[in-house]
Amino acid sequence: MILSLDLKELSYDIVVEKGCLSIANKYLNLNRKVLIITDSGVPCEYSLMIKKQCLEGYIYTFNMGEENKCFETYKEILSYLIDKSFTRSDVIIAVGGGVVGDLSGFVASTYMRGIDFYNIPTTLLSQVDSSIGGKTAIDFNGVKNIIGAFYQPKKVLIDSNTLSTLDERLLSAGLAESIKMAATFNKELFDLIKNTNDLMDNIDEIIIESLKIKKYVVENDPFEKNLRRVLNFGHTIGHGIESSLNGKLYHGECVALGMLYFSSEEVKKELIKVLNKYNLPTSFEFDKCVAYNYIVHDKKVVGDYINVIMCESIGTFEIKKVQKCEIYKLLGGSNE
Ligand SMILES: NC(=O)c1ccc[n+]([C@@H]2O[C@H](COP(=O)([O-])OP(=O)(O)OC[C@H]3O[C@@H](n4cnc5c(N)ncnc54)[C@H](O)[C@@H]3O)[C@@H](O)[C@H]2O)c1
Image (cartoon, rainbow, N blue to C red):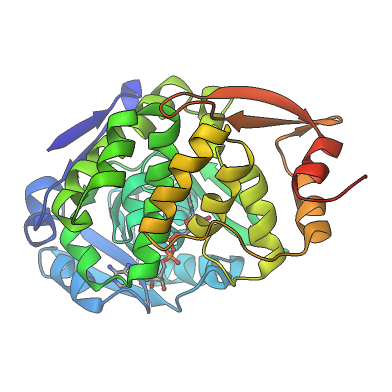
């Protein structure tokens, strides 16, 4: 299946096809110098498979982990590109999860004021969410995604066979982003995730339906001015929890917890069923003050209010303004 993300002259195709990695050159122009960027946790067979299809391919591998989505790695890759005399007609390909995608996209957006970029996401989170939409970034001075650019890939290739090497907890954490999109946009998708007997039997359908939601949101709000905020369902408190736990839970697991704070009782019941099914957390001990401080310094805060996404019934959403002190109460604190 090929989806087209329509952004006028920045439009691109998203290919979702099992086994497409082995025929990448059918979809990508690899008849040039290619830098494949990956990290040490991504099985190297995926990068090697792409490299052998390139006219002149190079692989740059950095150490896995969010802490390496940083300025140092960014600089090292730029130096590598200069050393190998990459020009503007060459291309960068990300092969990995959201960390590799965000960093590689940012390198591509700035090297020589922008060279072609293809994204080959290999985690479920990156396949359903981060590989499309053009948000690229690195972390800096302890702040996540603070330096970055909107820079769209020229093509995205999604091969769900790569998920066979991903551990189950990461798979579920990625699925939390699909559950988030389904809860706010698509009841059929929510029911499919809730009722399937074998996730991997339906994974391409889940990826495609999630991408259709993200595509719709990105096409209507490419620079995250308004509608795109809906993708933040579960993220306001989720990010706060994530920052208070220092990596104890994955991002998707924190989003799972975060969704429960802004759901009606009816939605909460449905969410808990589906989160339990995939071993995603529905409660977790965290430092409420640290989480609250993070939340009130977030970019979603406007004066005394925070814009949050509420889900009253599955498949729908509302954007609501909530006072900061309400958030504190929701977290379980009694006053500000
Ligand atoms: N740009 C966006 O719109 C956007 C959206 C959401 C999240 N993000 C970013 O995405 C990042 C998180 O992405 P993630 O959850 O993919 O984490 P990740 O990129 O760190 O990948 C998780 C781990 O899985 C390993 N891995 C990747 N593919 C594998 C495979 N097929 N088999 C085995 N192991 C594999 C990686 O080496 C890594 O250790 C964060 O930095 C977040 O800020 C970006």
